[in-house]
Image (cartoon, rainbow, N blue to C red; front, side, top):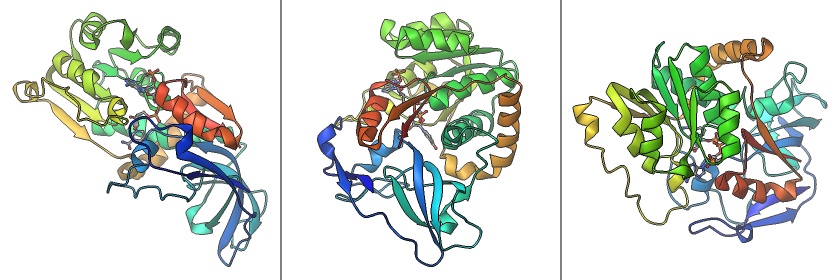
Length: 329
Ligand code: NDP
């Protein structure tokens, strides 16, 4: 069994030296436990925060212990009722080949219903984040103008498409390359821009001359500042992530225009996907329908080999992914 350990805590941008590949015996299950051979493991931006030794909504990763995170794989040994070898399960012990877990921490998924990777992307945590953040947290209404940052990523690409499917008037996305911008147009975004091409505020004003009603924030910093400036009265922002500052060692300078929140009666609402589990059934039903009739697409960037998981994570922070970044074990 191979697993990736946190060898040291990064300061600023993480590097390969912060990770260590460790060989351990393949575990055997105790009573109530199962062993899963992981097929795909997820790397996610929130994992950067867990590499710091600070109190947060999830405990920090421990040094010299395996990292964890979303994974799908096949049960290879079971001492638990309701699980037999060959079952496909979704669980939280990624970053390793073989996971030993209490059966209560695993959820069976149907491999005939959707590709395994979909349970870590469009039908999984990032899909629910997009759905809940846009519809419940920001309360997007028909006809509204929506702006989403990191729009070619896993959450962002779904936010834009769900917005269109739910009747948004205009959907604008920002991303980090010309190829990503092209992809956003293919996905049905009305306008898209590369945030390297000029000040975000100027690009956003050009893409949404009449302003925006909803901002889905994945980036923070200058993107949030630009969105505040472009917000119409009673605009809402779902504050999902602020990836632009995850590797910062100094507090951010932007948004410098936060006071506009008052005059414009804006709502900026932070959220965690974990609080929106009540939407899961509706979410899966609607998403599965859109996938079936071809009105929704999802991109995945798959890196091969568990030993490349740290590189996949670093690539995610650098923007090398289109859609969901995953590792094939
Ligand atoms: P993505 O697939 O969007 O990957 C991250 C992307 O962020 C990269 O591809 C990169 O694309 C972009 N990025 C990196 N650095 C910067 C920067 N400095 N400025 C602008 N863009 C940058 O990841 P996810 O879809 O998994 O997550 C998106 C966001 O949602 C993250 O902020 C994450 O923390 C948050 N999140 C929050 C959840 C919650 O419950 N609140 C749940 C899940 C995710 P590019 O090439 O465009 O720069």
